[in-house]
Amino acid sequence: MKPQPIVVIGGSAGSIHVLIDLLTQLSEDLSAAIFVVVHLNRTAPSNLAMLLERKCRLPTAFARDQQSIKPGQVYIAPPDYHLFVKPGKIQLIRGPLENRMRPAIDVLFRSAAVAYQNSVTGIILSGMLDDGVVGLKAIKRCGGITIVQSPEEAQFPSMPESAIAQENVDHIVSVEDMGSLIEKYASQPSSEPSAVPEGLLIESQMVERVMFNSDEMAQIGDTVAQSCPTCSGPLWKMKFPSNSLRYRCHVGHSFTAHSLLDAQDEASEEALWVALRTLEERGRLLERISEDTKQKGSHALAETYQARAEEALNHANSIRRLLYSLGSRDTMAEETQERRDKQIG
Image (cartoon, rainbow, N blue to C red):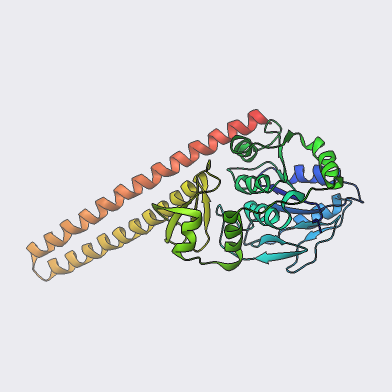
């Protein structure tokens, strides 16, 4: 039996009002089920489902684990859970972060491609960086339809631009044209699905299973000299798709090149703060030992301790200056983004 049509939508910064505009276009008799991942704060409750429910004609709610999939329903990924689609049902998984996100767009898109092949329509909306691009490739490899919001109208065009640059998408359109495309593809009879690529099956299983061994990882990637910034384990560069830089560890943490750089920056800064604290504490301790030694009459030894204290505090000051310079670069990047946002607006 051919699978029912489904629509998967991913968005991040600037996507909420776009998502509302899109969902309000859809008729009550839509024959496709809709799944949505928006990057949410993992540690805070969200009112996204309630907001969309008020605006949308279709029944809309946060997805529940093991929930049956019904046409004409909108399922939203809840905070801190991957939304994983299986034939006929939903699975919510607190699996490894992908692109430093949970829920991650790639997880939803990849699982949909594996479960529903050419019956999937995948949509990328406004957002930063490139989560969802790999998932969009998976949909395309399985014969599905790919749609990207026009970068010119996106508040944050990075995600749409990344998708367009790395994937031969079927449609690059404004949001006002997306509803008719969804209705069109939901009503079309799909052809017989083709076999799912083996590497895609393995990666999809990683979200559920966690912890693959080195032999299994060698089937989908090649080892690289970097370590995973999340768990410090070894990293593999993924072989598929061949035209993208993407990395995984055997636990399942996944990164595009951009998200890996961001994660390494964060890990480096954290390590520098630890080093700063340790050197400051060492310098102050050596100063106290020097003073105590001097009071006991051992002036030469006291001078040695004082010299070591000054060395530690000088190193601490060097790290402090480095941290401040990292902060100034972050501020410059934020100011550049603000100027860009104003130009877009």
